[in-house]
Each structure stands twice: as C-alpha cells, then as structure tokens.
Image (tube, rainbow, N blue to C red; front, side):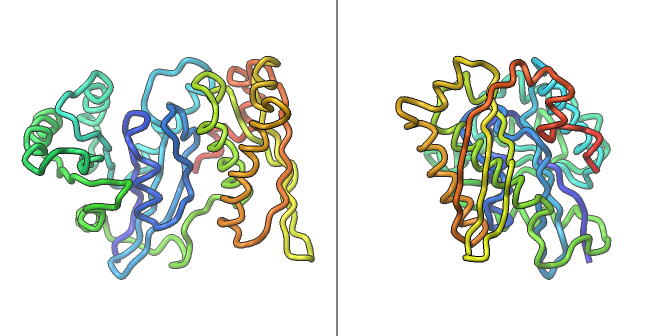
Length: 298
C-alpha cells in the first residue's frame, strides 16, 4: 500500500486547517480568520483502499515576534523535515505577495514533491480566471503539480487526494484504519475553547490567549465535567474576556460546549475561568506548561 506524511504549508489564513478537516471528514483543527490560529502541529489520518495519508497541519509561515512565534517557526521546520509530500496552500489571486515568494524560495531547496494547492478557487468569476493564477505559480516554482480547490466547499478535494497518492511512497499502515487523529480529546477541547475566543473577540486579545484544561472527567450519569482556564497576558484583557456581567465568557463557553459535545458524543458540563499570566508568550516555562515545546514533536 501507499503511506506517508503530508505537511500543509502556507501563509496565515489561507485555509490549511479547513482543508485538513475537509479531507478527513471531521473537525479536529480549529479555524478562524485571525493569524496564529494554528500554533501547534496537528496530526490527522486519512485511510482508504489506496493507502494511508498522515496530514501535518502547521502554523502559518511568518516572522517570529516572540518565543511563541519562534516555537511556531520551529514546528513548521520540523514538519517539512518529516514530510514525504508537501502541500503548499495559496489563494486564488493573481497578485503574489512577499510571503508567498519567501515560501517559494524556501521550497526550491526542498528535495521532496511539492503540490501547489490553489484554494478559494470558487470565488473566481469563471474557470478561465484560474489560468493566469496557475501560470504565475508555475513560474514561481516550476515543475510542481497545481490543483485548484475550495477547502470550505470541498470542491476538487477528491482530485487533490488522487494527486497526493500518486506521489506517496509505498509503506506500512502507521495507524489503525479507524484512527482520525492522535490528538487527545482533552487537547482538542482546549483548542475549541480558544477558537471561540478568537472568533468572538477583537484582533489584539486572542493572540495573547491560551487555554488550559484543569479537569476532564466522565461522570457515571452520562456527562463530562470539564474545567478550563482561559489565560491572558494583561489584567485589562481579563475584564474584556469576561465581558459585562460575564456575557463574553458565557458566549465563549456556550459555543465551545456545543462543539465539545459534538466531539465526544456526550453531554458536557463546562466551567471556564480567566487567569492572567503576564508575557507568557515570552516565557520558556509557561510555553512548556501550555504544550508549546518542540522537544515533544515526534
């Protein structure tokens, strides 16, 4: 059979996590319209009669501004090294900016198959509008397969899987055929809470937010008890996260609880608090406490 690792690369917000969720048919990676939504490497598994693909979703490629940013850059570097095939996601836009040119420059030195995935192709007025976009990326990184898709709608994703398997080496089945991810449920739940904070709050605050699960226990009466803490960097942010009369925190917790119930298939009693850890994104100890540790990447 064919099997191997496929790393998803691209600028922030090009749709890497949305694509991965679409391909495996289940929400594992969180999504939002804000940069730094994906901070860790998220591993998922797709299996069919052709073989097995282990997808590695990575943080958006950008310059590091703190130790968390440095960690995210390291995660992407590890994931490129571990890949058998690289999916480079770009947007269906004739303008190619400095971010994509920088990524293309890095990929020119990678001795692995690269598939350029032109996402959001459904937003173009017609199929002819794709031709100059494909031509520009072909000139930027010659010799690569180029596949236009819509990650959100799932358009042409079957063709993308077909192309991936063409480049996939022969190998063993790394995971049981029913495995979708190696992410612990507790970790996915924490990310779901962070996703709601990203979606409901302003640009500044979510970048400085992390989530810790203090308790994730099953009750005999058919319910999970989940205690979580949203950690922010400033005391002034704490009040904004809580909101007037607790309105914002309630909004975040309610939306997250519904996602966690869908994930577990069970009722969830979710309690969320807010804690302040100043400048945690520049603290090695705090980063490790929140699970951002490159030594844990295998």
